[in-house]
Length: 497
Image (cartoon, rainbow, N blue to C red; front, side, top):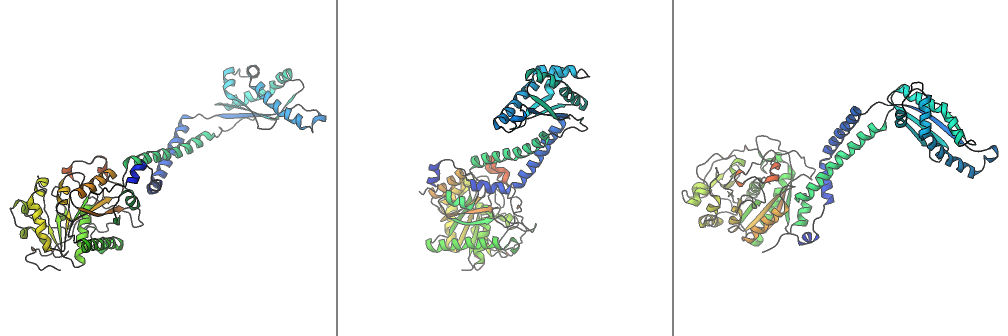
């Protein structure tokens, strides 16, 4: 039995596909922009609401310890700069603040002065900046002016040979100061918000371990990628995305022609006729792929039988807009109807269809009978190709049973959907049950430049049970509305060979 897991990838352990994550990030760039704007607005609003308006009044001092003969000496200039740091300390001392409190006409409390005065030395200069910031412009101005009135006496007591000269006198503030904190906080939160979201996405990206691109699929799975089917727009609400409708677009139709060529080449080389189409999980688009492969082969003049072996949720009849019928595949298996009654020829699509119209209660038991295998084997000689749509391979055993009497299998893998472990499990199950896995199809590839509108709904596999975290992806699908022509069994119509 072949092992389709890339062993080199296993040995390297957990890796981060930076390019793949960057592509995901680019698709969600608009979300990051919106989150950034919202976070910035909320951050700015929070600061605006919680902040208080402050009024500033400032005084600038210049320290001068030089005599006229020392003006040109660089060492004396350095001493002057050092002295500025000393005077900054003196202006910040309790003695100075208490003197300022006594000099204030309004009897301002020492604690107010202590909390509102900031003294700083301008770097590499002998300039000292004293700033008073309070909620009242009068108080700020009064404290600053008191500093101008008392500083000289205290400084002269400590350093009688030094000069501390006022170069900018205080001014009464008429407007509150514009704080950088509001703008800074808004900008910071506006950047941090999207950054946190990116980290969350990165963690999800690593944990999820899904296939993000056809290149990644080719690297991680030892199987050929038959095609990458791009996500396209369904422009007609009454019809589905079928290759018989030119509105689906040139790229969509040509992709299925490429798949058809590869299947025909495989059939010529190996003699394979019965092809099983499945996926690891529900809602990956396998039924639509199976139908379009059958239609593409029929367009090339082949006699094709399309079998709906997904007895839990038969949906081929819906995609092809077939009317309800009492006789289906399950009736032939149980022997309540013969094959000529169950197989219908659809003139409008030039294919034969064998499908059920309502779910059955015991699909695994029916498909595992010898009768089911004999039906398919007996039909081999009647058709050029038999395309079988099955249930998701990792959820139920139905597909593994059908793999025993099919020649080859094709895995449909939807972008960023099924866990890689489930894909490997499904592929290996098919191989172990005797069906050659000829390749995989990467479905709903949003990395294309083709229009990226979503499809609709594939439909749910309610009887399989919910597939937890992957259920939220079921917003893709296809409308129905194709008519059908006269119907007959293969014994009544001449098939094209």
